[in-house]
Amino acid sequence: MNMNTKSKLALSLGLLALPLALLAKSPEKTYVESYLGRSGIPVPVSVVSPEVAPRFAGTQVTLEFVVDATGKPMLISSATPGADAELVSAVTTAVAQWKFSPALVDGLPVARKVVLPVTIVDSFDRAARFAAK
Image (cartoon, rainbow, N blue to C red; front, side, top):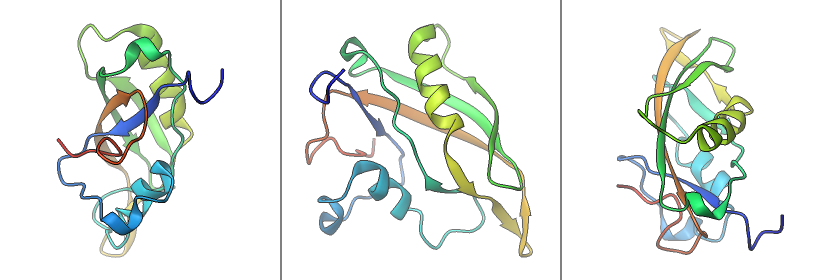
């Protein structure tokens, strides 16, 4: 499957702002950099976009998981009732490969629950890249 036929991932996170200076970077790198400086939440340090069929463009699925004290996502499940099993599987497989800096409490790493809405888009144009909704 080539890049023209792959659908790409846009994470729609309400608080995520995308500075214009970051638009030239990969969507994955931009997403990771948007979390720099945070410590009370698990911070993604490496993300993997799922490979899904173009028919899922515009579809959103929400995953729930725990980022353990070592930064590994665990217990990943869909929080979207009736979500397509193929889409959930592809997004879950991708997120399982993510790496996080764990949340810190009093300077110590702790496990934290994460709720992650994921929206699939056809392509990453300037308007769609990690668009906040």
